[in-house]
Amino acid sequence: MHFFHAAITSLALLSSPANAFDVREILDSSGILNAGMNAHFDQHRSTPAQLYFDFLLPQDSDALHVVVQPANDPAYMTIFLGQPEGALVETVAFLNLPVPEASTEQRLGAIARAMQDVFFPMLTQRHVEPSIMQISELTLGDYPAVELLGRYVEGGERGRGQIYVRMLGILPPAGENTLLAYSLMNAAILQPETTTDLARGFGGYIKRSLHFVARRDANGDMVPF
Image (cartoon, rainbow, N blue to C red):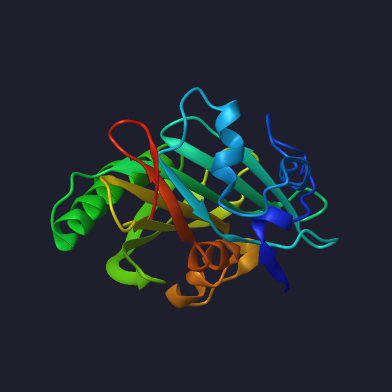
């Protein structure tokens, strides 16, 4: 599987979500070849992004379609990765999560509690058999992070069966805003055999390549990291 920078990725539309963007067209027309898609999506948001970050995307191909949908605060964007016939393989989403500045351990603990008590229940409230498999700390590149692994069974007539959840709370180098990134993985297609396999999906490639570029300070000014 070939990967390259999001700024020059060729994206095709699935049976596409509303307001989804062909990122290739946006970035080619802007002439900007890096510094995060958030900067390019600000013109479509009601408020500008709090964090700016780069990452790699899977290459769009005959076997995989990749769609990016920008969102308004506190969400940044959602990435849909699917098969050409329309089956959704994995969804990756990024959200802003303010956590008051304190020690790293205190901040990671606060994120872990938010994931366990708020975000995982929100993701699974319309489905059945939700369970959290583990919560642990790790380092993602240079950034301290906390990881939640869980699963649920997707309800409804069109339910895809078991869905695995991998949620990461990532601390940038400075500021109170942190990044919450989660993947929803179609178990029937990806067929993970161990919890380690959950980090090897498309979302795992995206998250491992993530690099924080800049943040907004209390005055709303963009400050590079």
